[in-house]
Amino acid sequence: MKIDLAAPTVDASHLAARFGLEAETLRKYITQGLVRSRVEVGENEDLGRSRLTVRFGNRVWIAIVGADGSVLSEETKFVASSTSRQAVCSTGAE
Image (cartoon, rainbow, N blue to C red; front, side):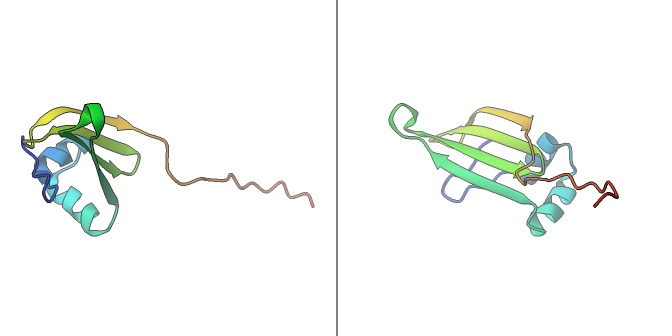
């Protein structure tokens, strides 16, 4: 697989498979704003490589991409929620 780094684009079916989804379902989530991405351009010893991170819910796909757009490595992992949650309980006592 190749990724166009000029305007980072990943094939929807490839990415959807990494998240355990159908491509059309992933497209729907993208349209709804539920998928976030970030591109980091390498410097110093990482010059010529970029890291593409795509997050959906608690799932993250990370690809290291060479200057020619080839995927050098990739991983999918589960991460903690990015929103803080507070437990709310009622004891009935005041």
